[in-house]
Image (tube, rainbow, N blue to C red; front, top):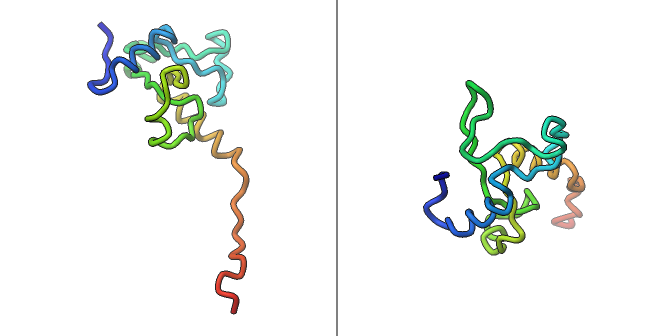
Length: 111
């Protein structure tokens, strides 16, 4: 039996079964995943390597920058299985692609 969260287990299991208990990243993290034919090879409850750490996939939105509130409202069809490394990498790349914020104060006090 594979591990699962205490809360939201039904939703988690639906997402994992759809993904085949394998990370669904197809390069959004910046890694081309060449060894996995374009898809991350990390599987839920398996190890990264012989002496590596155990992988715990998460069911998270396709958009890695979605807020927790927005993510909690999403149905299983809008979620994917992510390994922590790919999710963090995808979020990092998505943040880099956001438009630069303006440092102009727009004459806040009009002095």
